[in-house]
Every structure is written in structure tokens, then in C-alpha cells.
Figure 1 (cartoon, rainbow, N blue to C red):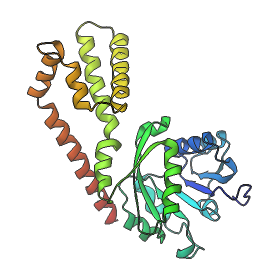
Figure 2 (figure 1 turned 90 degrees about the horizontal axis):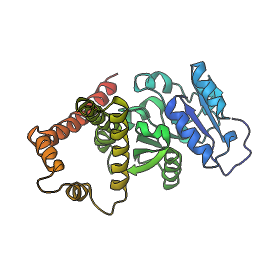
Figure 3 (figure 1 turned 45 degrees about the vertical axis):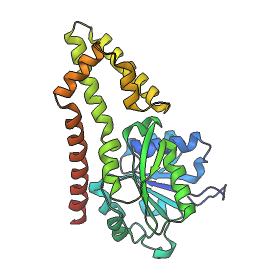
Figure 4 (figure 1 turned 45 degrees about the horizontal axis):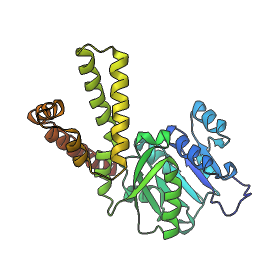
Length: 280
């Protein structure tokens, strides 16, 4: 990363070249960000090959990648975060460290600061639709992040979808529970609907197509924001009709309470994981 053909574009180094990093890189490139200002590291050759295929420099040396970087995106598994970040900046004084953006789930800012010595850190919780640039990311910044740093972090993370800032770091546990784990909840519902359709005599292909297109269309209607999900549900529920019968059975089975319990449980587990990492 010694060349700097466009000084107006900060140099961004990704530590970790997996799917999420590739998604962000792809989004940045699609928005016109110069590939020469980007690089990524990964110990696995297939990941490096995928990064190279995007036109981005792929490296194995983390310290080399971050040496001239203005922003470092920590895109590694939480379990290896400590090993990756310890001695990541062996030569730079704390005041000269780049902006750090962490997308490692469950690793609190205080721990990242302790491991890296950095003062300007943005912690982000994306979800898997980011792989299609259709994700949503909850974001919180440490006190050391400037307004310019926040704007830059939003631009980078926004390459994979929408960005939502939260008011306190603990809110990221709720973000993890609602949107981070959220796609799995919808997939689980889809599985049940497909199975029910097959049980009623539909072919697996027909049950799958009906379920997927219904989910897609319902999401599009909800995203228009001209009516709340509650109103949309009411609009499709005719008195004495099929939808009313189905919803009554869902209510009798305690589905709403089960969803609330599931989301709450996920948030509690997110806090537990952070505590476990803090003790390491």
C-alpha cells in the first residue's frame, strides 16, 4: 500500500478476506472507490484469490497491510481477534493509529482498545444479507472517533447495505439479536411454510417458490413504510377468512411470545459471549 494515486481517498486495509470483507470490497469498488487504495490480508489462499479476483491487493502480512493505512477493518472471527490484533501496530504510537472498524461479533470496544492500543474504534454488527449488498449494520463509535471518522465508517459499512447508529454500545446486543441473527428466524419460518405446503400436496419446487416469492413481496410492502407491519397484517386479514384462522392458530401456539423469547435469548447470549471474551 505504498502507492497513493488518489490522496482524497483514505487507504483501507482489511484484516481478514472472507465473505464479509469481500462484500464490503465489492460494494466499495462498485461505488467507484479506487482498488489501489484497498488491500486485504488472509492466511487462506482461496480467500486471497477471491480478493485478487476483485482487483484488490491480497497479502499475508497484517503489519505490512496496516503500516500506511488510514482505516483498518477487522473482519476476523471473534475467537482469533486477540491473536490478530496483538502487536498489529508494533511501530506506530497510539496517537498515530488509524481508525479501526471491527465487524467481529461480540468483541467490546474496551477489549479491542486494550489489545490494539487504539483510541478511535467503530464497532459494527452486520448481517448475512450484506453478502448481497442488502444487509443492515448496527454501529457504535468510541468517544475517540471524530465526525469525519463516523462519516467514513458509514461510507465503508454502507457499501454492504444500510447503516443504523445506536446510542450506546450495549444496544449492539439487541442489534445482534434482531438483525444479526434475524435472517435465521425468517429462514426457519420459510422452512416450516415449505414443509406445510408439501404436506398439503404441493410439490417441493412449488412450495419453495410460493414461500420465497411471498417472503420477498411481503418485505417489499413493509419497506415502503406507507403502512406499519401491523396495518399490513390487518389489511390482509378478512373477518372469518383463511388468514384470520391461520393467525388465530399462531396466537394459540404462542408464536409471538416464542419470538420475543428467542430474540431476548439471543441478546443475553451476545452479552455472555462478550463477557467470555473479556475474561480471555
